[in-house]
Length: 315
Image (tube, rainbow, N blue to C red; front, side):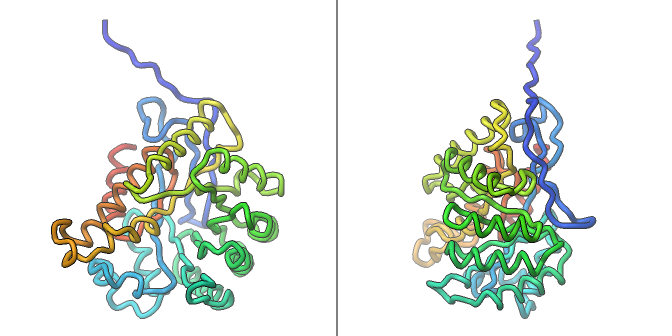
């Protein structure tokens, strides 16, 4: 007697959250099966890939020859954004305001807004705005950018426990943008923040989650287990407070670890530095997608090509 597998499609589903406008708008989430379980039910929406542009420009990419070559001729961050938007497989652009950090360059919010507006006018892809990890500065930044880009249906990534009231009230309630709820790799913290944003009045279809990440090999088992538990609770248990799509920034984690930044001259046995960074980015992104992320943010075109092929092969 032949084996007849039993399909496991769930009655619950991940919320479908639309970002951007027009023909290039992208839908995150919307599925009612575990990641890549196409044998259980059709996948309504493929996972999406975003490409990261850091506001410090070429300075950030100087140690990666492939990125220097790819962005050659770009005289500004806006030029880089336009070039990034041409990468095949990219569904959205993530503009990372790393220089806004008060403990770093402390770029004024007004300057960040000018850049965000210029990038928004230059590309037609949906925008995700990433902050500098300083809760107070990010709240001010997200508020100002949300107002300046009203009508663009952007995502501000992310609102934390320390600033969710300011971010949620301004970005979503006042200006109609989408809000990322960022927690620290813990299912209970992720759910709590979603509940707090909902109680504030932010609708479920205006929330995405960033449950936290780490480069593969750097405590990554906690990321995988949290993604697995969040997705199982959302689908198998029908937990409505965990049914928000998950967006995971990969590039900002993987291109900062020693495997990606250590020159080959210092560690010749590790091989080519750029290849190491690409492999770290691909490995981490693939694992996140297989565990439940609905979108990943990458930096290198080679990584994007590999992950796009990976998604197409499995969906």
